[in-house]
Length: 294
Length: 277
Image (cartoon, rainbow over all chains, first blue to last red; front, side, top):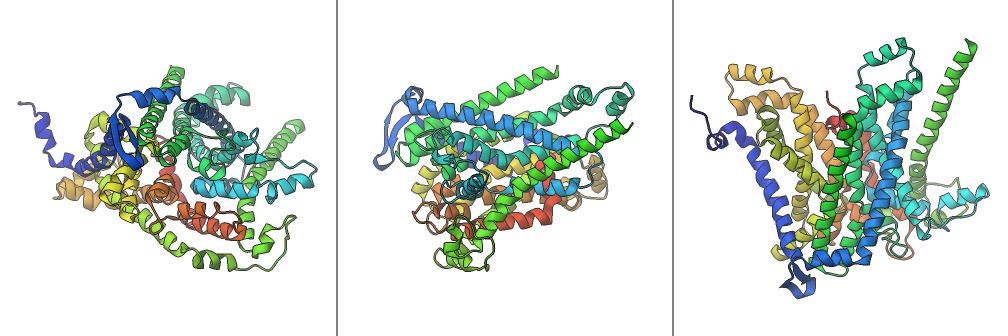
């Protein structure tokens, strides 16, 4: 029989259902990206219009920029802290919620899931009010217990930690939901076998639960890591990158470069570097987890 | 024997204690904001705080009168609903096509995944430059288009998982009954996958409602959405804490309503990609 080629396949009706989606994606994602890349190869200060062609100078200058590298460091610190903390806490919470004999499980789950759909802006704003050094309720409560007021997001030493804590408050629920869903769908039989074999709780956890959860954990950590590298909203509303540049993440740095310094060429280049970093880290993470599976 | 039972009860007690503390950590800040939103201007600032006072809706009146929060609310609502519906209409057939026939194969899947990795700022810059030129700056339509960028891949991704749980025999029996592929999709599969569409839709709506960077850069006075408006309240000195809290409550309110009303669908949407059936 004559083999039907790709050309024929394209015109089959069943395949054409993807065309609107592909067309939209190309139009709305690819085109702007290509244009942005084009811009990144020029010097372009907004008020003066597109300047001259500078090859890869914007990219090279980015790596020479101390501030840019600092924002990279901040981003890494934030991402690593946030993902680790949220994962551990979420794992703990999910395990507790999954514990048998917990009748109130539903109520706890419902309440603990609330932060998930709150806008980062609202979360940042709420904590900005609560952690205000003089007017915020948190310092007041601390004082009641005899603890000195803290500077929180205004204190250079505490600012990053404050951002991390607020993010943990916000995003832990998401990881918890994913892990919990994974936990509840686990096969029960290995557990029975383990009980018969006399395994302790810790052993059951390490050798049965964790390995079976690995795919779910991978997805959860990957999703969270990518989002954490991109952190912008929280920084904008909580600290504006301050005090000084202590909490400036890469996204915020690029935002300043584009919309405060108006240097579009530099900003475009830097935003691509950010994208590249995300891709690289995602690949690394996937390789590491895939390695653990074998 | 007693020792074992005691340990079991102790473990349960500790778990309850930790969970209760966690719940308090989640709920107390929100209650505080609600409380402050209902307090008189001056009262809201007071430290040490007054615990009992007569609640007032003044703050809400302020944000609707002094700032057009009604407009901002409408903007957020219109853009979120429109982008969600549009993406569902475009994305569901695409997801169906992929889940049944693997159209586009790995490239499509990887492409969808890759778009989730895009930082918003990378897209905001070109959109800003382009919109300034073609006049879509400060419009709701302009913002809507940008929301499609992150909603479509997401919806497609979620819907693929859902469609894969619908057995192919359903398509076949529909076609035996006289449908072609498309009508089979429209009349048989679609109605069944409504819960899936609802999950994807709710989650996409939430993403659009909460979106900040695109809205910050691409909107002006007329087309501002709630997140931008709310953040604007805190930049001037002497911000009214009561009013800010009222604004926060306003922006969270639809989410809370959605949450309690459609909890199952929201969670289904979240989990669809993560857990394999």
